[in-house]
Length: 243
Image (cartoon, rainbow, N blue to C red; front, top):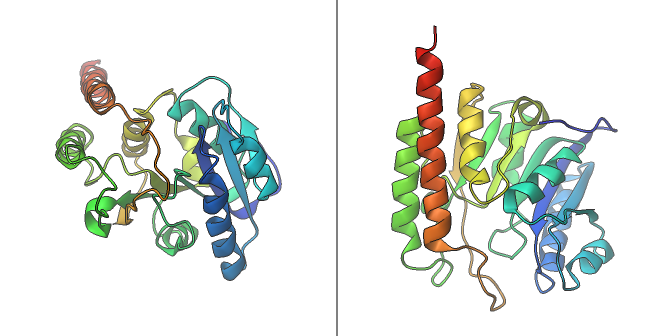
């Protein structure tokens, strides 16, 4: 991924955002609290994906750098946000209060200490609060994660966790192109293909503090992930067979 060359910081926290005016400020404040307690040189970047509410204004008022990404797509937002970072370590997470951004040691410490290149959150290890996830989702996530493990040869048990991190050098090696939700799968596939060291840590999935309409489309997005896994696996097999 092409990264902009600027003054290097300890940490960049990136949040993709689409109409999250009720929660984006809370998430920024949580991340800011962690940064201050840790004594880090850091930045918080909100990749605003064409919000029509006050999300961008609230993000700026809470001290975040807002990157405007008008073309819709989870992958597009994250790619734009990550490309603007200055941190040696990059952590990205949803800004809907479902993840605790006031406690990022499980991500920051191993990455900053060179113990791994990529850290993936695992909600099944960390716990899922009642009402935080539709009842049908865990089975689907486990199925797709098993398919991904088989296709990419990785031991990742939650392919779709919304909080994860990577080093700056890892980000520069990865070629991320997916525009939508399949970015989560591509991220792991790219890390595996580039022989990056992937680790996992427990991540608690909290129930969103405000009633909101989920941006996930269970069957459509699940199908997109499955097709991505299959197509990428087929391409890798063809590449290996080419003399």
